[in-house]
Length: 179
Image 1 (cartoon, rainbow, N blue to C red):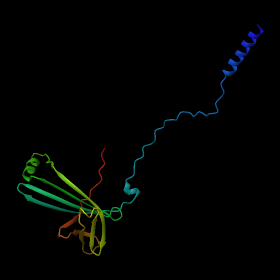
Image 2 (cartoon, helix red, strand yellow; image 1 turned 90 degrees about the vertical axis):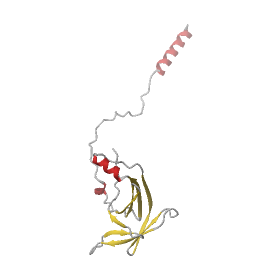
Image 3 (cartoon, rainbow, N blue to C red; image 1 turned 120 degrees about the vertical axis):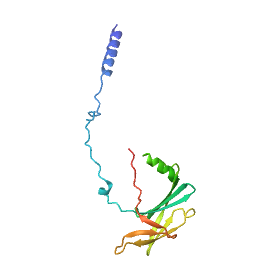
Image 4 (cartoon, helix red, strand yellow; image 1 turned 180 degrees about the horizontal axis):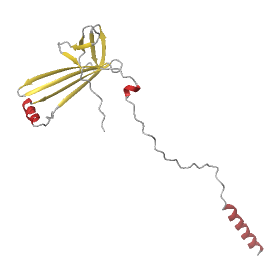
């Protein structure tokens, strides 16, 4: 009997001692407080970093064949980052008679096929010439433009290419942001 009593006493003490929990040394953090941040209006990029003005010159060419009018626009952009330059050639065609009829009704004629070709490259000045060198010289040829200045100033009025086409100032493409 003495053995049974001793055995039960040992079992009870072991169960009471092993049932205790130690306090953990790990710190518990309180839950984060939700605060709404004040809405700050973004500053325009031009105010943060003054942008280097890019120069854009465009040449429009229209040719009438049969009943369609073929339009080609060549845009030369240079001066926006280092010696980078780009030519954008846009071409499309439409029927001018149909366009007048549609505009008379207050609607807009959409061009069914408009092709845009972007030619990236670099530019350099030599005397009164601007030389545009495309990145892919095997597909596109080097273009040379003569700089024509405004009288009594050093601002470029227009460019003239090898074929005496007049590239007038303007037509810069603006970045578009969708919402």
